[in-house]
Image (cartoon, rainbow, N blue to C red; front, side, top):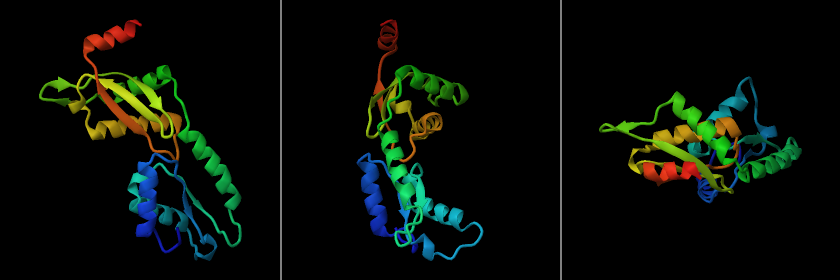
Length: 181
């Protein structure tokens, strides 16, 4: 990505990486050529995230391939994001985070019916994918899903990697049977 901003091609490639579940680092090159003043870095980060809203989880690094400025840090960041993309979270720990999130913000209701989240488990890595068992998929609104994902990110990081959530319905009887196992 050049200092002239995020191009359409940058956005297209970034979108494909996001959709494929790949770890993402936003690299801004030619930072040495940029005239800087107080707040330039933060202003530029804000502009990048405005253009790539769906990559708010991706770290940004400002480098200069010409001078080598911060290029060595890029390799450490690549390793870090790869670890985040492979992260495995224990079911018991995940459920503790989900239960704490539910205690802070109650699940939504619709026409007198309340969403019940029975439990969650991690289905896979690359990207981290969580399966959440609920009483009614229709009640699990996108905004509440985003809230749960944000709570998981807050607890475990998962920086530089997309997080996927799969919602599965389970009757209350089935969920209780699972608890007894």
